[in-house]
Length: 549
Image (cartoon, rainbow, N blue to C red):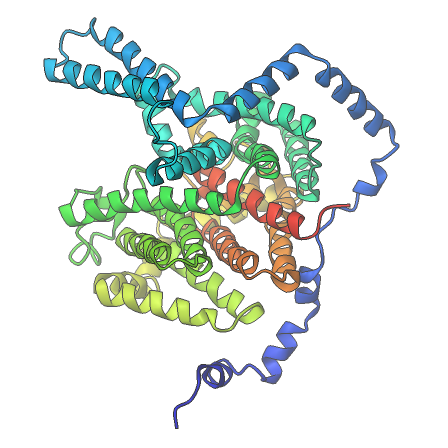
């Protein structure tokens, strides 16, 4: 009398129970299922503001820069694999010429670069004569290159953590590189969007509304405007990537490539973290409690990020995207590959010993299992069980969170709960509009000595303190807007792949939202870039399912 899987699901999750039915029929869930919109959009057509924007659009479209950027982008898309080989060979030849002036370079390196450059140039010359264009390898390479160049913007920002290390250490741009590139891509995206007549989604208008609230708080702040501008930049600037990503997804991008790039970037970070754990890389003593945890936890993975908790946040993006791709892909080799990516990210997450990330992931899967698909709870159970079986010290660290000793230490000077209680007192004094961006508990505030120069360890408390209730409601509204997009896709789409990708995105975004309650995740531009890329992808899926009128 074997019980089939369907009946097991109904019994374990009480699928026909009164409580579950009431939750699924609730006003909140019905509101989430509706198509998202922005209430002020109907005021824009025909208004003075719309005429101003139309005039600006005409000026831009007739400008030299607009023509130049569109020609550049079209030239980029037209580069074939053969000419890519030529460009790489010429680039290597230039590198060889530059290395002549560096006497410390070994001779073997010169020889290798010269031989490789000549080999590529020979391949370029022989390309038309050899029948290699019809070979299996080159057909796949052509497809790979075509996907790469069409999704270069998405892939570029997905690997932000690695690019950040490169530009900071090996180029004169240092910490300004991301702003320079973001503005450049924003201008290119504007040109491409205008040419292809891309209409912005309602979420883009909500983002602009969020920016206005932040600026309003900054202009009314009693502190110097220069400090407030720095705070605005840290809160707003990374989210500008939404406009870039959305335009390129609408014109030439791919949803699965976006998910894949985020998952692969997280996987590489995870591999480095796993290596650190097994090599026993030394960590600062403040990363664990010296009295209670130091004896059982010898190190915590931090990869190239510099913080285990921030690494854990990156890995949350990898877990949600990889499990979606695992379920969507049809070929068994693809399923095996994405399963390995999922295992790598979940294992590395365990080695970070980040309690906040684990609790956020568990809560997001648990909530979505009630609202969307009860069987999702099995994913939570399997992941949690594997992590705890492989790493018993993680169980100890999680249980210590609920002990009287942790509560006592956290309430002491410098503890997390102590800082949160201080933050609440600070918030009461500036309840409506806050003290102004950049003045409390985040990176800019620490730089200028506000809040005793320490981090509040909560993006939510930081936004609430800096921008008041109005700013915080607008901040929470960003996530609610995205959840509505996700639920709209899940409840209306007829495509299995769109539903699965949306569930994966919702798990990740909800986990990021919850994790940011106990960590200053908005202080890490790379994490906000990941959040913005995934948000743009989710919005794009929804707009493809039901185009904006």
